[in-house]
Length: 264
Image (cartoon, rainbow, N blue to C red; front, side):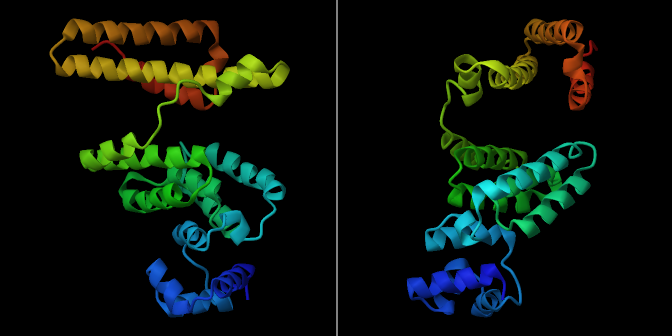
């Protein structure tokens, strides 16, 4: 019997409920619960947050994990997948799914799995998002899942659901990275400032792109051209001053921006 099966049985008995009641709450058959508890099978990864929520425990507690002991390994898996997910998303997905076999139901891995799923698998991604939103205790994971779920709704044309999801995301006027950069010293401060700078630059270019698009939609050709030129000027200035910024994965981003803002 697997440790997970033992834990589910222990929690079920502690709650003094039958396999049938647990099965009904999770919308599965009682035979499925029985197989989990005997180690014949494991719950689907999308059910892990729901199981943890039902018993009122964290996913780490559900798997008897020492969080600090496993954080380094999880970060290693995430970084390995992130390095290739733009060019080889299927391989990145395999890396994350292999990680989930070792750390089933881990919020960070499930969150990163979302970044590897192709557009045609939006329904699976939406299911994972809803599970994370309901069960995770990590606000960063929760709000990222909300953002991705809103993007899925928008892509499917379900704008009311998109708006309702966006309304649940709090407005943030400062970030942890900004505070670390401003309040700490040395390497931690520098690394935080470097990361925040990258995010701010990407956001500025993205917002100019949107402003250009909306101006064009409204027939404001002068405004659209102004925003295009502003984006080009920002990109060219930064590339000239900090060419290393556009190395690695940012090279692909720069080329995408350069093509998007090329004068037509």
